[in-house]
Image (cartoon, rainbow, N blue to C red; front, top):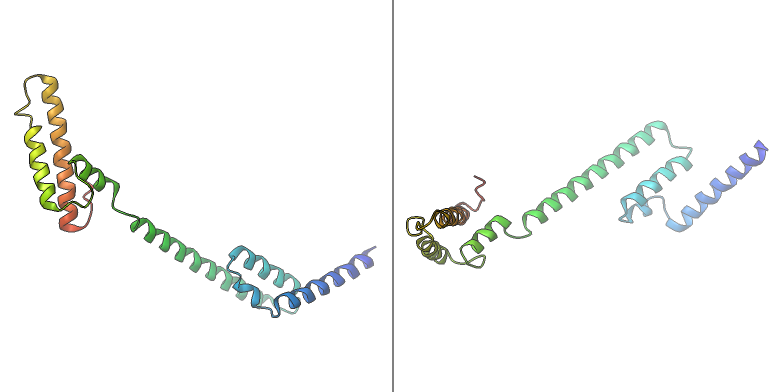
Length: 163
């Protein structure tokens, strides 16, 4: 029974090796598939089927494959970081413009005018008739000040102030 299994294994290996040569017409052509999982599986299969390769060569090949995977991982993380950074303005900045009743990207002169107008309308000193009205106007004033400060910082430094 073992002889039959050994013979079958030899026939299968020769068939797979012959098929791989016919399909890929060269040992390295499958590496350009663009699918890293497929490439890794083919490399593993090549290593298994190639009995002439030494252990040192197999280790070097594995080391090169891991380095290639790490480089691909770094490239994808760098591109995803770029896409996150370039996907648009920060949400807090857009919300700051909305708080002032403006569309994102309005000129700073309009921002300043809207801020002054809204602050004058909602200033706690002008709206202190009842405690509820005073509390509400104070909250609105705080929101307006924060929004104006965010937009001003963004326009002067190009960065969001997290404080």
